[in-house]
Length: 258
Ligand code: BV8
Ligand code: ZN
Image 1 (cartoon, rainbow, N blue to C red):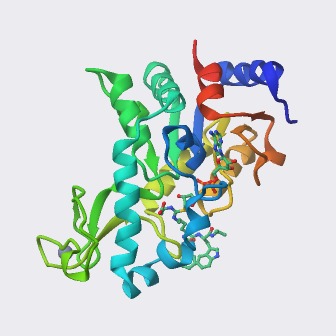
Image 2 (cartoon, helix red, strand yellow; image 1 turned 90 degrees about the vertical axis):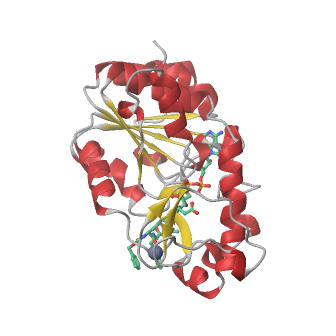
């Protein structure tokens, strides 16, 4: 069951060493040390804002200016923060070992940036994450679905909100809001990776939001094990073969470095 400390690290490393396939599921906790606020922590985003007010299509329909004000702030944060040691350790392992699939609930783009760094002049794709909740670094037209590169959003008034170059519809951040379906291909790929994995490494998630939180159960169903890295217990901790209590930036490099 749950093990912390060096014994836990040793046990977790042994599982990782013999795993043919590893799937990783990360949440906001993997980006906390980069300075990206989590949702539920003491300084969590949802503490200040009620998620129902902001991360839903109804909120956007009701007050697109307020929703964009929140996302513009979070976009700037994501763009100005840097991947931390956990992102880099995951990306280096994925590029070097080619037996890891990284799935993230985060929309901050930090895993993708670490993948490019890890690959250097090589191919970053083994470390590019499946972003099951989309990306704050991409815009999408709320009318015609065209995707585009992120614009600097002036959320000072309805009139200054960004509009689609094709149909003039309001742009929105290309993220999945509550009550919205996840992209079936991305979720399908994540589920398939988890179903083929011997180890599901779950890092920095409260594991409360579905269907993403169901991904580790795909690995358990096929007899694989869950290894968790979190500063606190989560909804998934009871299912963890090894539960490593601590910060991702400190623990993940010790887990994965050769
Ligand atoms: C869906 C993108 C089908 C946007 C996100 C009522 C109405 C409608 C839906 C529902 C409903 N009731 C339930 C649902 C389903 C709902 C859901 O699961 N709700 C939960 C709250 C119960 N799910 C959905 O709506 C999904 N769609 O079901 O569609 C449908 C269709 C119509 C009607 C019904 C159903 C869509 C969910 C996707 C929502 N979008 N993000 C954005 O980011 O703005 S979710 C968002 O929240 C994140 O992406 C992430 O998934 C989640 C936050 O969770 P975490 O990442 O885990 O972050 P959190 O802060 O919670 O935890 C951080 C963890 O890190 C903690 O454990 C902490 O201890 C740890 N930590 C902190 N620091 C560190 C650390 N660990 C290590 N090191 C550190 N340094
Ligand atoms: Zn459009």
